[in-house]
Structures are given as structure tokens and as C-alpha cells.
Image: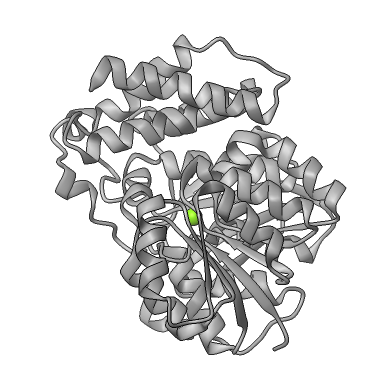
Length: 381
Ligand code: MG
């Protein structure tokens, strides 16, 4: 395969899986970027021999530069270094698996360069979806979803025309606390929340899938990516995580995408689209799966899902506030500063306290992010 990629956030869960796909298909990795994980990034540099590597953390960049001094990889540093790496690479495809709002600037930089952006960074779309889409259009870039649900919807959308779409069925595993009452949620600990039934993921997204915030962010992501109204999205709890989402058409035909739950399928499709290539994932043994089940999501108990619908219906900066507040709240929870059920309270308070703005710039997003985090850390830390 004659392709060259840049992997943004290469030491994260999706980043390492993107490198698995690159390894399996002999895709050249021209550049990688990371945060702090020097050991893993050094290993990746030795294996993939990228021309450039940027580390968000300054000390990590310095340490890494010393460690890989014997290689030909140029090490850059900080947010500027990450943007410079995107500008220097000759890769036509960027896998953006950066965590959080830090992924927005790289998305915009890749859009300006007209790259195919295999997007796993939800916040780019949640916080500034319209701005990102405008830059993508202007730069002649392309957004291909990597999130498993959105990849599935993207695949199912090829069966009909956009004006024939009635609903998107967004499937959800339901998380480890599916079926819990509000009372039971109050007793949940950090250890309980870090267990996920079917997907292996990073800590932040594991908590987000336990609170259903992950599904909420995905609702917003779907609205942005596929230009549908929030009311056209139906969340379906599907514990087996075999159907990764579906599209219901106006003739009531429902087209679904099924496979083993393995993100590498989604990354691979984003890299090879419109073609399909030999699998890196296991084939689906449907007889072993046996039964597929479907339940409604409990938006009352898992309040964050409801707040996500509310924020996207309101629009403006509210989805961004939702996401920033959630990031701050999850960090507090992982730090044992708040209880699990308080995550939703923190986010709801942040939404209520915020003066929304319908027309906004990227600077407004960062300002809102800072305002929300400062308030939460002041009140709760
Ligand atoms: Mg997902």
C-alpha cells in the first residue's frame, strides 16, 4: 500500500492501534506526536523510523531527543511543535487520536493542509464541529470517522442517499453500570468504573462510557459528521458490542455494520477508504455470539446523555462547555476528589452557569474551556 501517515497521539489507545494497522499493511509512518510517554514513543520511533516526532510536554521532548539522538528522527516540542510537524510531513493522511480539546488545533492544521483526517478526537467535532467542517471544505480536506459507531454509520450510509436517511441508530454497550438505579450509582467507586465489559480503552473514555457521557459526545459527533438533527439519533443499548451502529432509511430498511469489537477495523477503513483491504481483526463468529440484545438507554439515571442532547439542541458553545466540564470532572474523579455520581452534577452546574453564545470562534472555545475548568477547580478541588 503506497500511503504515508502521521499519527497524532501515537501513544494512546487508538494511536497504538493505528500503528498496528500501519505495521500490518506496510504503511509508512512519516511522523508521530505524543504527550509524555517517552518510553513508548522511543520504541515507536525505533520501529517506524518517522522523520518527525513532536511531544506536547517540554521535558518529555528533551528527554526523548537525547534518547533517540542516534536515529534520524527530528524531535519537536510543545503545541507549536505538533503543528509544525503537521506542516512538515508529506503524509496525506492524519490519524488524530489526541485526547481532549488539545486535538482541535491539530485537526484544523491538518484541514488547512488538505489532508484526509481519520478522526478519533471527539472534542474537535463536539467543541467546534462547524468551524472544523468549514476548514475542511476550504482546505479540500476530508473527514473520515474512526470512532467505531461513526465508522459503522459512515459505512452504512453508502447503501442509500443522504436525503433517504430517516434515523441513525447509535449503539452503546451501556457501560459497567447498565441497569443501575440512581441509588446504586451513588456507591460506585473508581475501581468499579474503570472496568469496561467489551472494549479496551484509555481511562478517560472508560469513565465516559460508564457515565454514558461517551455516548453523549458521540451523539454530538454524529450530528456534526452526518448533518442530521439530534432528534434523528436513537441511542440503542446493545450489550454485545457486535452491531457498531446502523442507519434507518425512509423505507424503514435498517442497515447495520457488524464485526468483532476491535478499533483497528475502523482505523483501517479510514485509511483505505473507499477500498477495503485484508483484515487485521478476527472474523466475526456469529454462532459463538448467538444472541444480540437491544434495550433503551436510561437517560434519567445516566443524566449526562440527556445533557448532551440538551447541549446540542441548544447549540453554540454549550456542547463545548459540556465536554470541557466533563473532562475536568473526570480528572477530579480519577484523582479521588469527587464521587462517580458527582461527575454529572459538576457538568450540569457548568452548563447552567454558562452564558451561551451562538456565534463563536476557536478562541471563544478555548476561553470557554478555561472559564469552565477554572470554575470547577475553584469550587471542587
Ligand atoms: Mg465509540
